[in-house]
Length: 391
Image (cartoon, rainbow, N blue to C red; front, side, top):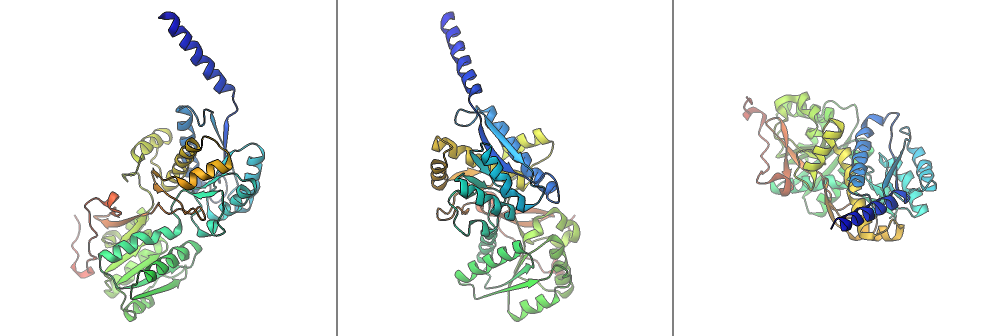
């Protein structure tokens, strides 16, 4: 008996030694660690590092230790392409995309050229997948996905006419245009899109437009300060839409700007540590233990990309570009951001959608989808004059 145990231990030690001597599986990423985007991208980097630690603690990937190599683009999107080319030259078998759509575009070009799979975890613009890349797979919600929850709310509240407002920036425009296209395709009677400048503080012209169009839904894609100024203008004019959605209303800063006037406003949130998504409780616990803070959306995006990549490597049994891309195209997987499912024509994400939220007693609560909202339904937008002070 003792001899059998000794032999088993010797075999395990030999296998462990062989694995240690085998070259690691290199995963390359470019993350802004200096410059204007460094603070925002820090969470993204932390999510990647946690994922790599967990993979190695569980025995690695494909029987090899995973080595995560991260380069800094200095918050300059134009540098991302060259850095990914360097990572590929130095042996990166798989890539995880950089922070930002512009940087992702330049990095994706190198991934395609080298036929290396890249997980696009932080490039939400549709421009990244417009040319139907073969090796780039989106693993976070695209800008176009913000429309889905709003459409669900509009149907529930029996809205007929929509006024869509977009701040004059690329991200807001892409979200608003997707909202307009989807609403029109579903047969809403009137769908109007208006673009406003970054310096707008008085939204009376837009209220007049809503009245002229008989719009019963006010849908806004912009920043928290914009939404706060909309609320102030609406309250001053006594304007009460049936549905009031503002993408940024789920941000903590918004409630601090308008206080209790934030009640009943709908918004969107792609991630929350409290969401009951697959593996989220464990992720939050591990992230908090490692970094002494709760994860944000970018940390979750990075971690979800790693989760998808690890499963694809397992299914493919190889890091070979062709085999891995086949696995990523075919698979569906629940992650902390929702269900990974891509459009096989261009690699764009189809399954992950931001949650629709509603401010209730000063906090954004999930109102859609049902898997997050539970039995909670969307509350009607109460007229300003009929509201009671919250205690």
